[in-house]
Image (cartoon, rainbow, N blue to C red; front, side, top):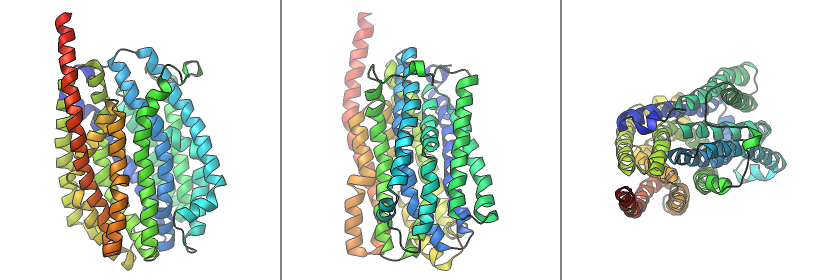
Length: 454
């Protein structure tokens, strides 16, 4: 394990080293998520596309569970490395591995046992119910692999192994993209084929991480002898992991509520918003990738007391996100129609999707600033600010905005709800940082006193 990237690299080089693989991983994730919608769209059946859109929030719940152990573990590991607690790092990573297995089994039982309730909650119509049931059955059976895959995509980044994380995600994505056309179109399995391809991809990712722990040099561990929830390991992982996962849970809940609102206008708007949001993921996940990529560096600097470098890292990362967000947003506004048509060539879906995607891009240039704040708070171990920010974008702000805009403007209002919530949440992130900045100044004074006394 080499800490040069944390200790000696200048900020731009350190950010590039950590963030580029993570941004590439997020691009891989985008293709991973788009693949199912794209190839299902090639069937020409809007009901199957709508079914994939309706089930996406349920899949996001699995991501949320994985993030409890992944983001929580990554944050804790990077801070412990900064403090020199290498033995504790092994215990944290082992806890995250076995915790992911247990959580995955629980989710499988919930998915398969609660299927009728789940299908009703996500807003399935008679046209989409059987397609959604088929998709979720296979996803449920593979829950353990999805949770472990999501968790360790993040955990390995805690020690700076961003390239390993990228390779793990790429393996799963390539397998999924190769299998999608074979199973969905070639074997005529439709949405069931999409789900099976997704699970096989996640299995391949987990196998790679097992190989990483068995054969490669790492300061992490998945050995049962290191597994423990004591020594504040459970609380240390969950204190950051749960607020981080709440963001995913709220994204899932927001999507379910959004789809239910859209369903009152028919299956076409559901399919169109599903396609628009899949396309919009490129802008969002690239900026999330940079924010999450630099989180281990922020956590290490915070743990080691190098607060000046930490602040420079956050400022530089925000500037990069604004540039990327602006460029991508402009490209999307210029080529909106071809982007939507790439997923499905149904005239009604395309007409709705073009309008929806253009509205979603309103917050594209600046939303990345909020993600740097959010992952920065998590990396510093600031559980409450992290929780508040996670609750804001897809919960405290989004839900009331959705209710009001739907009541006042109908379908048009529903479309505008997300960018309005994004901009309001950005304001919340600035207010939270003002408070944390005061705490950082106090910590800097304490560190200066300690140096003077030494």
